[in-house]
Structure formats: C-alpha cells, structure tokens
Image (cartoon, rainbow, N blue to C red; front, side, top):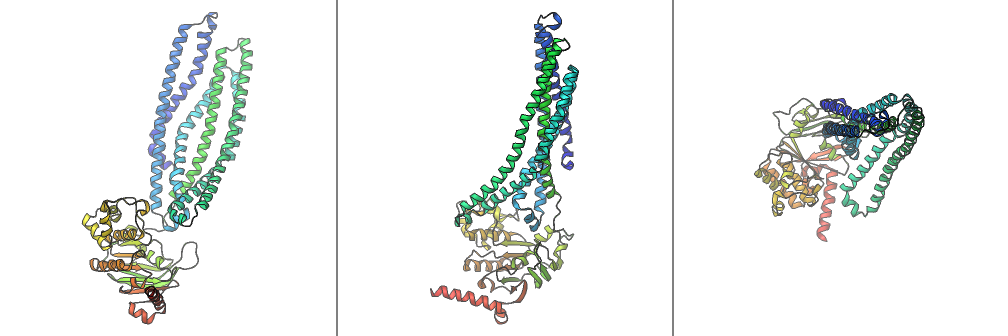
Length: 580
C-alpha cells in the first residue's frame, strides 16, 4: 500500500500537523475553563468576589482557541480526504488496468461480481482506512496521552483514576476487535454474491422474464441479501454492546473524580474548576478511546479489503507477452501444428492434435456438431487461450512470440453474441478504429448489409444504441458487430457463428460483398448451415476435437460421411419446410 501512499505523503504530513494543532486547542480549553471558573466566577483568590473582566477576556480567548481549532480541523479534513481519494483513484485505475490484462480463465476464477466489489467497495474501504489512519491515529494518541497528562497535572488522584479505568476499557476494545475481525472478509464475500446475482440477472433479464422466473430470482437475491445483513448485524451488535460498557466505565470514572474531588475541595487541596476540568478531560479521554475503537474497526475492515484488492494487483496475466512486433512479409496466413487445448482445471482435451493450414486470402468455413470445439479452435488464433500442446502460427510465427496487441491488430473478430456499447451506431462500428472517416464507416456498414436499416433510423449513424444493444434486433446487432470487424484494417477476419441471426439472402449478400471488397483478407467463418459454408474455398469438419475432413463442398460430399449427414439433414428440413 505504501506504493500508493508515498506520492501523497506531503498531504498526510500536513494533515498530521493540522491535527496536532486541533487536538492542542481541544486540550487547552478545560485548563483555561478551570481558571475561569475558579477566578472569574467563584473568585477564590479574591475572597469570593467574581472577576467579570477576567470572564470576558478568558471567554474571548476560549472562543478564539475554538475557532483556531476549527480551522485546524477543517484544513486537516481537506488534506486527509485529498490523500485518501487520490490513493483510491490510483488504486482503482491500476486494478482496472490489471483486469483488462487478465485472460478469460482469470476473470472466471475471480468472478465478475467479485471484481466489481473489489474495484468499488473494497477500494472505498481502503480509502477510509488511509483517511482514518492519518486522522484518527494522531487524534486518538494525542487526545488520550494529553488528557491523562492534564489529569495528573490537575490532581494525581484524577490521573490515577484514569489509568485504572484504561485497562478495562482496552480489554473491552480488544474483545470487540477479536470478535469482529474475522467477520469483515466474510462481509465482503457476501457483497460479492450480491453483485454477482445483480450482474447475472440484469444481463439475463429477458430470459428471466421469458421463463417467468422473477419470483425465484427475487428469492435468490433476498437470500443473498439476508446473509449480508446477518453478517453486518453481527458486527453492529458487538459494537452496540461496547458503547454502553464504555459509558458505564466513563461515568464510574466521573463518579470517582467527583468523590475524591469533593473530598479534596473540602480539604482545600483542589478547586471546583479543577474538578470540572477533570470531568472534561475524562470525557475527552473516553472520546479518544471510542475513536480508537472506530479506528481499529476501520483498519480491520480496510485491511481485509486491501488483501482482496492486493490479490488483483499482484495477479500476473496468465498469457505472457512475447517480443515480436508483428511485422512479417507473409500476411494473413494461419497454421495449426498439432494444436491441442484443454480448459483450465480440466483434464479432457477439447481439441486434440489439430493440424491445419489456411493460406492468405483464403476463406475457410468450419463446421461440426455443437460442442465439438469450433469456437475453441478460432479462439486460439488471437490467443484468447493458449494451446496446451502443439502450436498456432500466424504469418509463420508462433502466436506466443507476438506482443498481444500486435497479434490482435492482425485479426478482427465478430462473435455470435454481439457486444454493443451505449454510444452511437457510428462509434460502435468505429470501436476498433476510432479515427475512421465517415466514408470508411459507411463502406463497412454496406459490406455488413447494415447500411439500409441504419439509414432508416431517425438519426442514422448518430443514433444512440441502448445498453447492451437492447434497442436493436439480433440481426441488426450482428450486422453492426460485423461492420466493426470489417472496418478494422486486419489481415485475418474471424466470424464465430456471427451470421446466425441473418436470413440466407442477407448472409449471401454479406459474403459476396466481403469477397468483392476484401479479397486479400483471410476469412475464417464458423457456421452451422451448409448454405453459409458451401461457397467457401474450403470447409473443415471438426469431430471430437479433431479435423476429420477438409476440402471443398463437392469434395466433402464425396469423401466425408459427417458432412453428408449435415447436408442431408439440412436439405431434408428445407424440403419439408417447402412442402408444408
């Protein structure tokens, strides 16, 4: 944490100096008040005659000291909050930067809800920890030590009473801290669960409504929220019992001060003003100790949150960057050399020893049954995952040797699930190429067969897309995503079932436009329909994680039983549909 605090150490030092000034003003007041009561009000040294002039002068001095203390306190708050907020700001940016560098398995291991909690609530707790540490530690220490010092200065008995009460107070604090410390990590985990459910349910709200599962999700959220409240209540109840105990100890100390003070006043060894000052110092002492409790509570929770934040900050990306900058003579070549792949924490290979070469400018269609590994295969090319065996080469270079940004600049991707952002259609298309001209954006939309429906919207390309593309149909979202991929000046285009929501005519027009306007781009398309694949240069059939056949449509009809089965099933469905 020091790495984040160090740049703002001057703020903390200045805040500490201001806090010393504020506490000093607070400690001076009771001592001045005791003299005002004894001399100004009671006139002890003047035969019981009040000294009105002294009351006015001393009262004005106390008001000035209070105002000065207020100035010190306000300045302290400004610098403390500056330090805390800036530390949190740097930490939050670094956390987000780390998350952006995570591989897919790393994001899955942490969980989306947990990452949201760590970047928001946990870092807020760390900010509070830093602020409270700077402000609370100095104030508590000085107020406690200063109050005891002035009590001894007023009367040794008063000082001893405060010292006798201190071990009991500290014992209560230690008990509370010991009971609450293990609960803070659990509290943050419960908050993780709340955020995870919220994230899932908001993303899947249409499915929830379609399946009439609102009541179930309300109960699930209520259960998670109940567990959060239950943990929170345990902490609050512990501290709720502590405050009355502290008050008992305070009033016990005050009663003892009054008892011994009255005896001292009768014996003329102390004065009423000194007794009043002692009560004030005893109250300040207790307030200091109560602040110590809050300080320990904030530190405990802040440290628990810091450990969770530190897990993110200290995580190294699973995928290490290579050194190659991506400059090659060959452009658009992809080759799988005995490539095998298994998901993390799984012993079973999804892909097993795949060898396949795709030439520059070629269009390769990939087909196969659901779950056979088609998406996993194409995800190895931009290195979303690393092979567990063999290699994947782009332009003759192992993808693990590339800098990831250099590799991904060579590749543009359109996925079946189209991710759109809450910005204009133009900005969504230009997401991977922010400096694209209007003509380039329009051309990409025309290739993707999106220009017609975009131009029919009231604001055209300046139409703002609703969150997650909710204002568009599935086919419209896919075409905007395809336009984004086409606009990017990449050598390789991957379309992972990205045309599943398009009708056959629109899909055919899309592939014809791609062939005409992007002839040199290597195209790798994962498809389910024969009609989508038959015009590709080659079609690769994936079965059980391996390439069982590869060739043209006509070749596969002769040589591949799996392809014939797909063809016959789809043709019979088409014929059945026509006969109906």
